[in-house]
Each structure stands twice: as structure tokens, then as C-alpha cells.
Length: 139
Image (tube, rainbow, N blue to C red; front, side, top):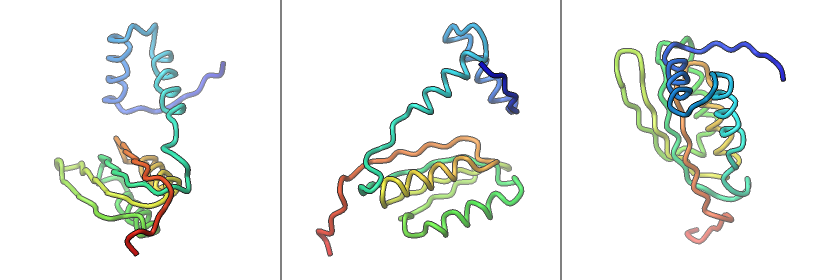
């Protein structure tokens, strides 16, 4: 086993400590390993070339340096996937965005992972709904 050092904000550490208590873990390391396993083992949502629709929801700190610019660039680079986006100001420092996406499972998953990994994005979730093979019935 290897030891790693990570930085966590106070609220996230408090949530981990609460989980340690409510789930009966022996310590933080055990709880974090369990959370990592659950996240890493989450299956991809279908064949990467199949069509899907998805919602990508995330909360971010709008004051994080260059974050709004990086997010905007990511969505412009994937403009063909975005159907609609809702932007909500939660308070003085945080915003929430919900984007409705449509495209190939692999491309939508990649965009979602990229957005949620940005520094300053606090919470994120993607709900990917596979549609199966791409058809052009309404052409």
C-alpha cells in the first residue's frame, strides 16, 4: 500500500468524517478508498459509439481564476453536443449549470469528465441515457 497526500477543503473533509461515523469505518483512509472504488468501478453508459442524451449538472466557484473561460472553451469545443444550458446564481460566489447534451456516449462522457475535473468545480453529476445505435429516422 502507498501513502498519498491530497488537499481537501474543510466542508469536504467534514463530509468524509461524517461518513466515517455513519458507516462505521475505522478511519478516513478506509472511507476514501471505498468512495474511490465506487467511482472508479462505475460502468460507462453503453457503447461509446452509440447515441445518447444526458444532463450534466455541476456547481462551481465563479471566482476561481479563469474557470468560466475554461468551461466556456470546453463547451464551444463541443458545441455540437450541447442542446441547452441553464445557469443559476446560487449565492455571491457559487453558480450551478445544467446542460442537456446529445451525441455519442464516448464524446458526452469525455466532456462531462473534463468539466467535472476542472479546478473550482465543486460537485458534478452526469446522467447519461443511452439511445442505442444512431439512426437517422427524422432526416
